Amino acid sequence: MNGLMPDCGGAIEAVAMTVPLRLLMNPADGKGAALARLAEAWPRGVTLYLLIDDPEAAEFRAWANGLSLSCDLVPVSTGKDAPLLEAEVWTQDSFMVARENERRILRHLIKADRPGRHASWLAPVLGAELSATDMVLAGGNTLTGPDFRLVGAASLARTPLGQGPAAHAAFDARRLHVFGFALTQRGAPPRLAQQPHHIDLVVSVTGCSDRDGRPILLVADPRKSADPDGPRMEGWAEQMDASARRLEEDGFTILRNKVPFLANPGFAPNPALRAYNNVAVENEVRAKNLTGRPRIWLPQFGDAEATLADFDTHNREIWQNLGFDVIGVYGWSAFVRSGGAIRCASKVVSRWNPIAKGVA
Image (cartoon, rainbow, N blue to C red; front, side):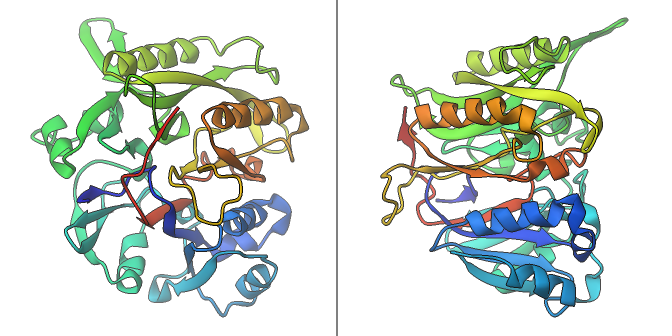
């Protein structure tokens, strides 16, 4: 299938992650542990390309030797580009993976709001072509389904004149949908806006459709207490409602998953989102998966923030009710201030069957 790598469908064949050495210098902050748990969560049959400053560095070797891996690990040195920046842990944002016939192409997003050099490091290892685009886009602000794409309104608003929806649509042949709400400002016509800055923090592509064939999306419902049934986050909740209605009008079935927007003395001095929507999804059932279910890798926060255990359970149950085997990956409280979780920290670079999907 030509076009961009979807965020659902076939079993993951290969995935990339980035482990900047500076994130391993302070084990107490939990960031290295979170990345280790994600690496350990990838199953047998997956190749993990791990981008690292120097695979021979003592800190990396100690971290890697402590892993209990099922996947096949391929360390990739960033060579003369070392040292890596801490922000380059977010492998998702700086490039897109595309296929044109038998050619695999890594499209470097040179104007991403989290720029990085991941594509140039990976392309030689993957045997992929490397190209650059000045599209004003980050990998975290677009999601790709089996036959549709979602783009956050901010990426359209920031795109230079002549690179509006038509240019985004030309990036991939799937039908383009915009995530956002109408923002009214005094003295100006309404315009589309989004909150937060990347849609993959609050929207999940499930790869499933309802009985009428409408694709199912999960859209976050923000709460301001540790109780999933507690009060909603005023203002932002209404913006998310409006964004969800817009997607419903576009032909999607929307399920709402409750997420906390809270402060925590250890991880977030100011209220911050726990990104339960930032996931990795397979719809194809692996041959040796004894559950007979497709898989979802779901960030969990209740290990370090015990008061969020009910949110962990609530979000697991939503995916279980969609028919998924939920792989809970703990430790993501360490990245709350940085704003990301599983999808941000990884990039699927190949799937066995990119068009596989399910019915819920």
